[in-house]
Length: 283
Image (cartoon, rainbow, N blue to C red; front, side, top):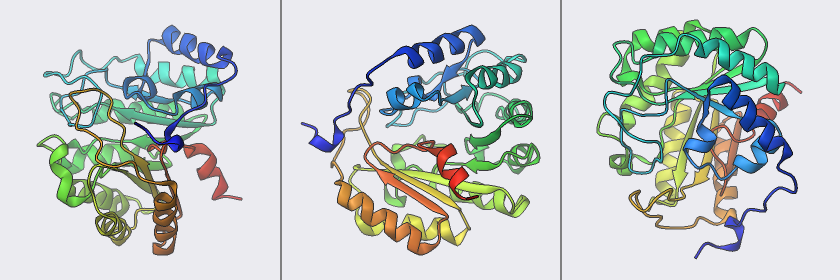
């Protein structure tokens, strides 16, 4: 049974949510909000926020915690109209801060990086852009395409502590993910970097603090920490429901280490309050 702090209140009105769904359908787009069963979907969509998922809805990887469907090859070639559709949808929703992520496309020669970069360029014309990128198998040419498109924030998730990386697909690992974030900073130090981890998988407090330390060693700017919630029976089970007090401990520890912001809580996900927090840095 889930504790009281993991109970979500439904929004009083679904009018805004329906509008978001209709606009997404109009432009033929997917959101990670729906595909990953994000617990914040009601609150975010009610406020008109969404994280766009590009390059299809099938991932070439099969992480044990993820709800996105796995398939090889990853589906159809990139849709050449998708960059414009993402930009138009963001305009229709009146978004000033846009988050773009994607499935992994290991089946493509460039891992989808060219398409990803084009989406960034289209949206950047009228909004602040945060991207949550795959590891591109550590390919520096693919990473450089993203950096050269000049998003304001580049996120890549470490997902969990070093000891538990086996819950990720075999093509992903702790050191490769750290290298991706380090490479972004070396290519353009002006771009903010960001990462995220899940807790409640059996990790220790010391292991979480070590991840924070490792991320700050490579100058990662932002960190989010959230409770792992099992999407389906075939996903790995939850080992612990982390208390709000423990999340507050992690938040304070991260800020002490020098992150520009740390968001930690039961329902926090990578893009949680991303626009609001980014704007607060410039106040």
